[in-house]
Image (tube, rainbow, N blue to C red; front, side, top):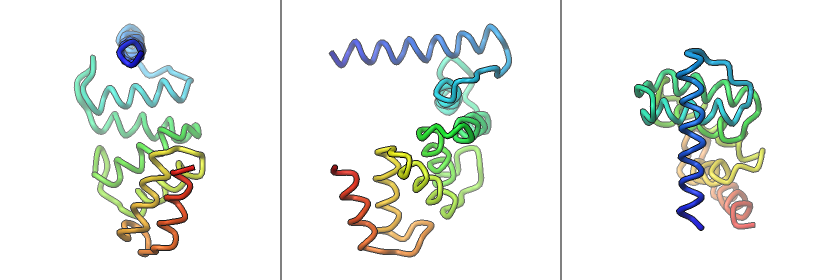
Length: 135
């Protein structure tokens, strides 16, 4: 049931941020927890919104090879969330997350090739990545 799944995700975020509030420091060792803490900072969920802290947590998660963290670092570079906009870095992170099997990373890598975002425009590579997304 979708509703139950959404409640579970919300509870997970609340548990992470509650733990953060209780510790008042970043002591998470799980890259997925670190990723979600970054998400909380980006959107101001149970913590004050802080895009710089969001980027730091996404980067820490990415450094631990979390494909969601890697993707989100690319997203931050693409839109300038907590970091200067850098389309080349965005592409590199999208591609790295795609190579790790992240579906959003695959899609964004294809889009970057189609529009030439951070990489030379290449329609053949666009179709190559889109095919991976459809599999």
